[in-house]
Image (cartoon, rainbow, N blue to C red; front, side, top):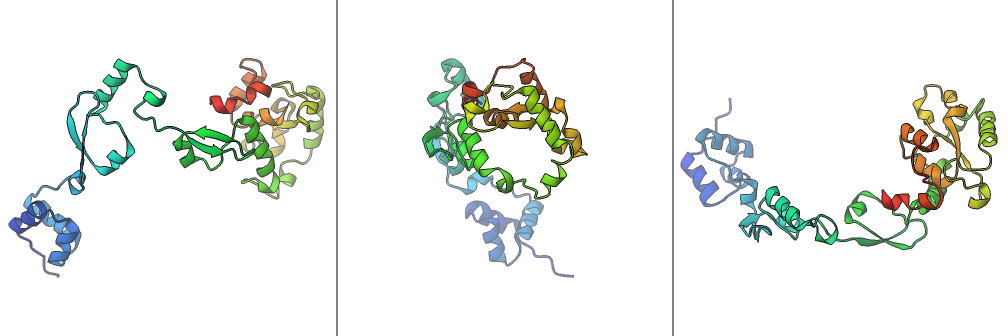
Amino acid sequence: MPKKITISAKKLHYWYHEEEMTLSEIADKVDCSMTTVYNRMEEHGIDRRTANQDVEAHEVHCEYCGTQKEIPPCEYDQSERFFCDNQCQGKLLKETGHLNGESSPWWKGKESVECSNCGDSKKVYPSRLRTKSNHFCDLSCYAEWQSQHRRGEKHHQWDPDSQTQFYTGKWKNVRRRVRERDGNTCKLCEADSNDIGRNLDVHHIRPIRAFSDPADAHTMDNLVQLCRLCHTLMEHLPEGQQRALLEGHGPIIGGDIGRQVLEMS
C-alpha cells in the first residue's frame, strides 16, 4: 500500500495564503498530485481562495450609488458600465427610464455586414454575428437566397430518395387540384405568378415529416398555394398560426408587408 503523503498545516497555509502559490505549484513542490494537496487542505481546515482572488482585479465604481468594488478581468472586459448588483442597476433604469438603445447598460452598438443575397450593407447587433453565418436585408432577400442555396441537393436535409418516397402517388393530382382551387394567386398576399415572375409554390401546412405515411400529407385541407416569400415565412410558423393567418384571423403578411417581417421580428 503506497505511503500517505503528509504536508504540515503550517507549511500548507504559508505556501497557499502567504506565498499565494496555486494548488498546481504546491503539488509540483511536494511532488504529488493536485488532488492530494486539496485533500490535505481539507483535512487541515485551510480555506480556499475564491477564483477572483487568483487574478488581478479591476477597481470600478457603481454607476448608481458610487460604491467602489473589485471585479475580475472577464467582467471588466465585457462591459463599460458597472453596478454593485442587480438592485442598483434596476434602480437606475427605473429612475431614468433608459431601457433601450444607446442608453441601455448593455448597448454595444451595431456592426455593418453585407447581405448574403444582394451584397447591400446593413447594421446588425454583435450577438447576431456570433450566432448567424448569413445576414439579409429583409425577408425578400432571404427568400431569394433560400431558393438559390437551399433547394434540391443544396438543402441540408436533402434526401435523394425523398422524391420517390414523399412525392408519389396522388401528389401531382392533388397539387393540380390545389392550383385550380386557389387560382393563380397566393392565398396570403394575393400576388400572382406574373407579379413574382415564377410559378407559385404549393405548401404543406403540417409538414410531411409529421406523418407516418407521407401520402397522408397530400390532402386538400393541408395544402395551400403561396408565393415564395409567403412560403418562406409560413415554414417558420407553427400549424395553428398558419391556419389562423389563412382564415383571416391575423395580419396579411405577404407581399410588401411580408418583406418587412424579418426586420420586425
